[in-house]
Length: 54
Image 1 (cartoon, one colour):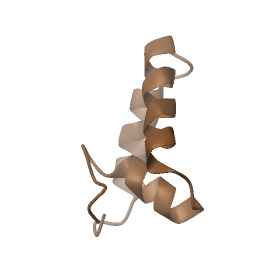
Image 2 (cartoon, one colour):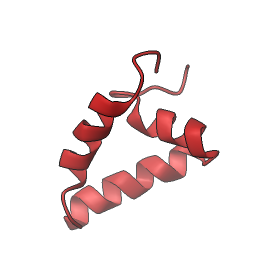
Image 3 (cartoon, helix red, strand yellow):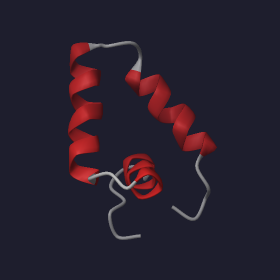
Image 4 (cartoon, helix red, strand yellow):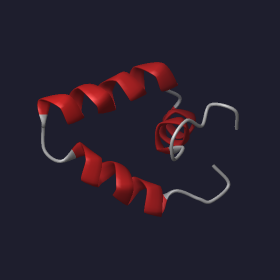
């Protein structure tokens, strides 16, 4: 996996659902900046859920 940037969550989700990793990263950053829910908390939960190979 060469798309991993910070914890690999966006790359894992993009690979799992066939999405564009760049668009998913922009979505997470926009959600964090606009404080829609708690995207940073969700990001770390997804980090704990994803397989360690990513």
